[in-house]
Length: 206
Image (cartoon, rainbow, N blue to C red; front, top):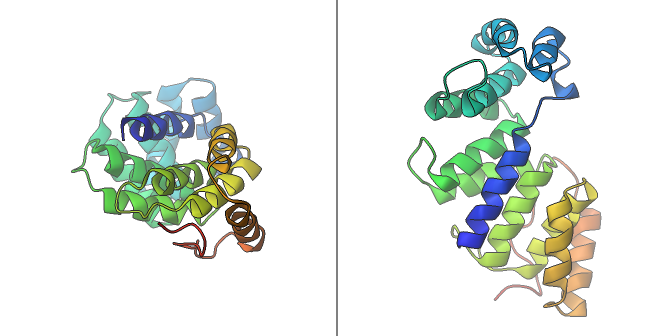
């Protein structure tokens, strides 16, 4: 369990990097943030976030989470990420899931964590796919142990550039039968972004 929690926190750290092209709708704020001019970023971003812009809400949540341009406030970070997550912002859904999993600023709720991780993963979010794979690998948060689903998720995450998933996939493959690996590969090939992820496999259930 400790190993899993550490992996979640490491992945969360990766998700809190500087914003990229997804913030093209308000380049002044994003540019200021990337230039570490956080006061200017806050000036540009806060009104957009209050107006309901999901990208701005996500960035403002990051600023509160990291204490950049504002006093660090995890409760504010959670609230802004939740607003963005409810609008379908995958990065924010992942952060909300991680905060629920660790109990950071909110009561710990692993079922809600799984729900938000899954919603982000079904949008193709690599860190969320990696996290959900860990849950299937280690049978935590009420998720059944299923190496096939774990492998599938790490396959998807690895294809999206998640290097942690590459190592996890290689490690679990050593414990799987050829039939299980073939099923995981088939599931990976046929799954489409935006569709539900399978919750159990035919050959991997314990």
